[in-house]
Structures are given as structure tokens and as C-alpha cells.
Amino acid sequence: MKYWLSFLLVLLLAGCATPAPDAGSAQGAASLTVVTTTTIVGDIVTQVGGDHIQLSILLPVGADPHSFDPTPQDVAQVADADIIFANGAGLEAFLDNLIESAGATERVVYLDQGIEFVSGLEQAATGEADHAGGDPHLWTDPNNVMVWVHTITRTLNELDPANAITYSANADTYAAKLLTLDSWIRQQVALIPAENREIVTDHAQLGYFVQEYGFKQVGAIVPGYSSMAEPSAQELAHIEDEIASLGVKAIFVGNTVNPTLAERVAEDTGTQIVFFYTGSLSAPGGEAATYLEYMRYNTTAIVDALK
Ligand SMILES: [Zn+2]
View (cartoon, rainbow, N blue to C red):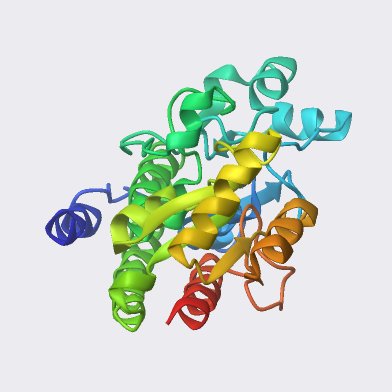
């Protein structure tokens, strides 16, 4: 994966910029009206677009992308946008209807392109998952976000070639930060004894993180990849057995879900609940206000609970 990342970085450095013959647009004036679904997608698009885009984010801080219900104002915003960036992979259950209502089918960029889906979760086979592709929480591996940066940069460069040099330069700067984040996560995870690298979450949301950094996903309280699924009594009993027999040290519960069920399982099994961030960044100025802060916060929470 590391080699592949370096290759992508070289592509970003060398390939994306199409020098504009004249910089006709005024310095600092936004050239493009951009809409994103989640705050996480919004942050990555901001890193590349900078001052040259005017960005609106549909989901408020703390909203659950699985169950979000757009307003008529959201439809109008999407209808007016030059381009819309979505996570895709079935994360935003509202997306298809929204895009159709807004007549924006031709202007959506799905950031799942070029990413190989993880779908190893045993519970997903119960049919509870709300999409067939696999885990939609693509951003939990920064290597996937590197793919997003490339897709976003290519898109903005095509739509607004006058600012392509800036977009590509922003992308290079951010790609370097993602590489740093990736090595930092590896160093942190190395602090956890191998036998403790077992993850239980409220719903299956860490598939890419688990795969990339050598964890085992023991299971999830809510079966499948959406927070909207409900476990049967049998499924709950099964996960409680797993937690007890493996001596799992923590249940990780995200900021965009209802923790009630996970709290019950924690109580039944004598396990601790650890809160972290899932479908949304924190409010601006908070502890996870950017994607980089979000990943550092979550990694630290996981390492502290399991080491
Ligand atoms: Zn989720």
C-alpha cells in the first residue's frame, strides 16, 4: 500500500496541473459553487479547493449520514451547485432521491470510485446491510482519502482550469499530510499488544481501518454497515458471547449514533464504552474539527483503550 501511495503522490505532483494560459478570475473570488454531503467530505474538498470554491455542506455537525433526511432547501442548494461531492458506496441513503429531485444526476462525483470495498464482515451476510457493495465508511483509512484527493483535484481542475495550479498545489500539500498521518497511525497501533487488536463497534464502521492497520473486527452491536439496522436477540447474545470469550477490552461508539444498545451490551459484559467520531467531524474549533484531527482523536482513543 505504501508504494502505491507514493505512486499516487507522484501523480498528484506531476500530472494534475494543467497550467492555465491566463488567470482571468479575480484573486480570492470563488469560481465554483460546490456542495458536499458530510462534514468529512467537506473538509477534504476544502483542503483542495481552498478559497476558489464556495462550499456548502448538507449534513450538520453530528448528523448521521445513514438516516439524514434532506430539506427542500437542501434540494435547492444541490440544484444550484456546479458540482456535488458524495462519499457514495451506499453511505448516504438519501442521496439518489435528492439528486433526482434536484436534477443534478450529471453533476455528482462519487468518491468511492477507484476504491476496493471491504466486505468481510460476517454479520453483513444476514442481509441487514443497506447496500451490497461493502463497508461505506471509506475515510477510516487515509489511503482511501488519498484517492479522494486525486478525484477531487481532477474534477476541480477540469471545471476550473484557470485555478488548476492552485488546486494541484493544495492537493500536494494535503497528500503529504495524509502520508504523515498514515505513518503516525502505524506507530500508534504498534503500541497495542497484538492480542488486544480486537474491535467491537456500535455498527460496522471501521472495516478499512481494521484491514489497513492489522486489527480484527470481532463484530458490531448493530449488524451490518448501517446504523439503522436492528439486531435480533440472538445476534445480541452472540456478540455478547464473543466479547466475553475473547476478553474484548472496549466497545467503540460513534458520535452520530444512539448509544443505548451498546451501553446495555457493555453493562452485560463488563466492558467499557469508548466514544469516538464516526459519520461527522466535531463542531469547528472542537477536538475533531478536521479530518486529520478526527483520525488522530480516534486512533488515540482506540490505542488508549486497547494497549
Ligand atoms: Zn455508519
